[in-house]
Length: 236
Ligand SMILES: Nc1ncnc2c1ncn2[C@@H]1O[C@H](COP(=O)(O)OP(=O)(O)O)[C@@H](O)[C@H]1O
Ligand SMILES: [Mg+2]
Image (cartoon, rainbow, N blue to C red; front, side, top):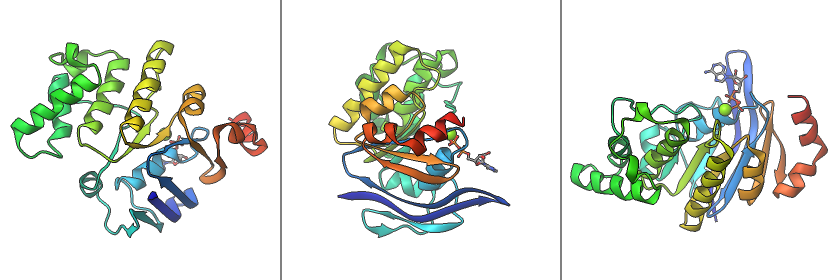
């Protein structure tokens, strides 16, 4: 089943075209890797899929229904969550409070939201840090907290924007386990990531963006052998 589909998405910032003719499908239950050199348009595409940016042209279908008037609130309410490449927790709040900010988007009742946040902290092994201020966390835990906040909205589709950037190899391994666990528990995932080992290990399918267009779409081992993909990365 196709969960999310885009047809001919274009995005221009003034004279700069950052996405052209992006038609893609995200199938329920898969991990779709989305890779490409810096500036390829990956984050812009995430911003469009989550309502933070309006496409210049093109359509988005979610569960077969055309999306009009996409806003971050609507996307969240319909089960789409994303993380940000540059994580920005509320530094003056604790880990548990930050996760509660996420769960409040789903549970308007504070008591229920706090209970959900606690469950998520437990699920992601963050309980020992729950009362620490977000500002005090090292990058590995900040990245994990970012994911916890998005998981707390109980999404069906999770868009991860470079969750492993800045992590050491042990933390990358842990993040790989975590992403796989999400998928095994029924989440559909789109993973933007520069750590190739993670993308290749995790993805059922990989899409490659270069200069705003899709240049390859296939199994990880096919894509990594594709001459156009190799050339795009050599250019970086
Ligand atoms: N708000 C913006 N205004 C103008 N240009 C932007 C904006 N956001 C991104 N861009 C440009 O769009 C291109 C794609 O950027 P981005 O989507 O961040 O790529 P990626 O995430 O693949 O590195 C880059 O050339 C970037 O400078
Ligand atoms: Mg990016």
